[in-house]
Image (cartoon, rainbow, N blue to C red; front, top):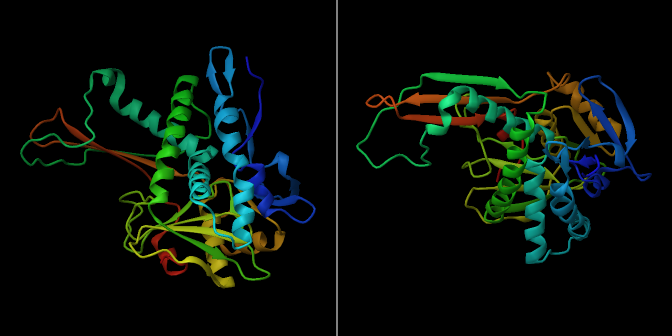
Length: 336
């Protein structure tokens, strides 16, 4: 049986890019309002976060065989980018993997997915194993589907039972690989912070800003959403922007302090509990400016069922997580 481990959802090599010269990181806790410098080994981590549990057995293979090698490749790539050196094709692939897993490996995303599983189980009930699923509509005449049920639940703060937990963790490993392939086909731009300005990072650092036309109550938003933009800080000096605009990537781009502040504000809005920075000053300003920045900021997961008008045995199911970031932010951050 494997031993328990503290496992970093924000890898230590990643947090070093947001550290002070003495190697500490300022952490703000939305729940109790505490703001203090802490050592990298004790932040951005949870006990046995990626452990597969079978009876009394505890397997840490996801951490040791997947995340540890992945994290080890990031440091040299970040230093290369900060020195304005061009990464190789292989390094870009490793960076895409690293960024993709910053999306799926966080406690927020893990528990969000577990909440979705619970919703689905509650909707389908004990007969769910007899249900036939189709990713695409069946080949038949046009039909009409009418919304009958909608469930909106805040992400549960407790982990699921072992069976659901294990299924979610295995599924998220596959999701990360698929997301990395998607990201490689989109437009990448490195945003450079000006002197005396820095990017912060939150406990949910893969930020998607929806386009201005997006209705956050109607549907979800993802990297492939036309007009949306993904922002992922790579260090206090660099932030990766990924878009699906069809425009050629800009390579790198210097931005001003107001733009850095807007991106940081989106990281605050997207965070669940913790924010991290090489200085306490930007965290104080950001939290003071944004309403609703205190208390745990749990995502809302939506599940809808729309039965067929002509055949009640058929239904469309629609899952999405409501964006914490409103479309009005598209006017304040660089979307193209």
